[in-house]
Amino acid sequence: MYLRLFNQNMSSEKKLLHSISKADESAFEVLFNTHKNDVYNIAYKFTHCNILAEEIVQESFMIIWQRREKLSDINNFKAYLITITKHIIYKSLREKAKKAIAGSADENTASPSNAETLLLEKEYGDILQKAVNRLPQQQQKVYLLVKENGLKREEVANILNVAPDTVKFHLAQAMKSIRAYCSMYLSAHLFLILQAFISFC
Image 1 (tube, helix red, strand yellow):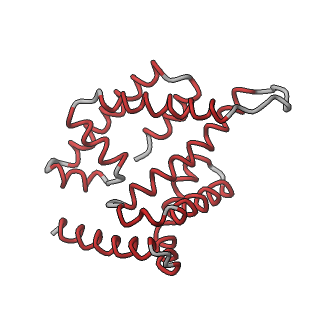
Image 2 (cartoon, one colour):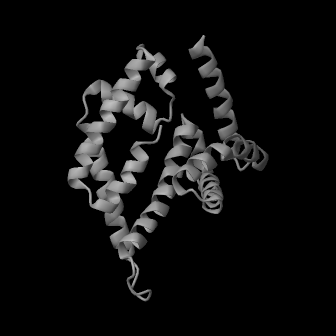
């Protein structure tokens, strides 16, 4: 029963995404109205700022529209949207971290170059990926389904044919291992940002 409903929802979503990929603005409006509150809630959770959260919503869907030609190839739009939203939030939090570290530094101090920014992003991505790759197989499956694909614990339990409590346990263990690994290798400010993301469920 669950799989049938899941497949029906996926079919409807695929049709909507296909229409948007053909520049259908009315279909895009439906998509926006369906998901805007989810994006706002995620953004506000991490920024605690109404204005910034609204800006993140706008930027997230602007990126979706700019990349609309690729939407037909997306199998899980929710996970795709969450990934885009997290990246935008990450940029915002990274800027806050830089300002906090700078403290009372001269306002005229030159900002980091694009090359330095790319290095920070690569450091974050590489270390997080290594941490995930080190997880036991079941923990890795649960982590990726919840964190990368945006599925709820009950959905993961159905997919893996295990109890929801088992999913909760594996996720907790995975996050504990990732935190421990990243705390050893990430610079302090990037680790604080990472903490926010791996704590999100």
